[in-house]
Amino acid sequence: MRILFLGDVMGRAGRTAITTHLPRLRDEWRLDFVVVNGENATGGMGLSGAHAKVLLDAGADVLTLGDHAFDQKDMMAFIDSEPRIIRPLNYSKAAPGVGARVFNAAGGRKVLVAQVLGQVFMKRPFDDPFSAVDGVLRQHPMGGMVQASLIDVHCEATSEKMAMGHFCDGRASIVVGTHTHVPTADAMVLSGGTAYQTDAGMCGDYNSVIGMEKTEPLRRFITGMPKDRFSPAPDEATLSGLFVVTDDRTGKATRAEMIRTGGRLQQAAPA
Image (tube, rainbow, N blue to C red; front, side, top):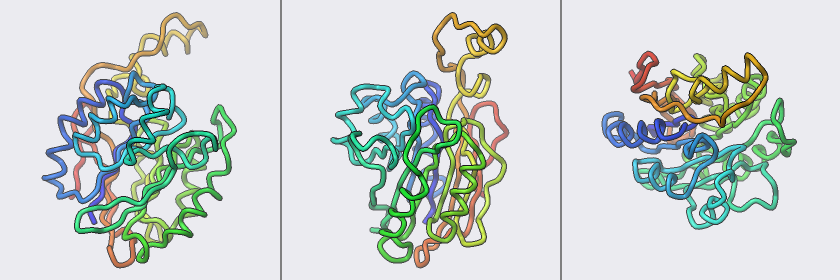
């Protein structure tokens, strides 16, 4: 299976990049399944129902969220009516929606998608992500119930993301990090057959401070004093993510390549 994961969509620029590029890339790269992290697609904070529809209509099969899952209040109700949206497994037990679900891919194949939030340096004490993921993977073994599985690890610390990759190695097809908005240069297939990248990066304007227009973040770093709200940077975005090929029989990855399309970053496409 040919699977594409795209990192955090950041504001209008990120949404525009998705609608501009993703329909073409599905055809050019012969993609079977696409997962997009929509965590910051609405004003840089959360995802609205209207913007979720935009991303799904552009070609995303599944949207994942993150620590800002319900910053847009309409998502509290919308997520229960749209099964293609996944919130973190270890979020509040009172939260609507689910943190893992099996989806149909091309050719009738089954793909498990799950997301967890990290604990290190995060503002809120979420439940243990390792035990949450372990339970889901035990219920959905690769090569059995599902032909592939993808875990979105929404973490601040690179060490916690790496630990999750090794924890899932051989049990998940893909473990990919989100949240920090900067693509890491470590896309690889781990020794047990799991495709891994510490952070997929963002789908946003990289002439920014992690996707936000530079003026206000710089003011706060330099003076320690806020003046205005953060606002997403408006110029052309780079789609950043991870492209993976998996073996339907075993669920293991055979290729893992970082991708970048459009915007300011050096371009990279599947070989």
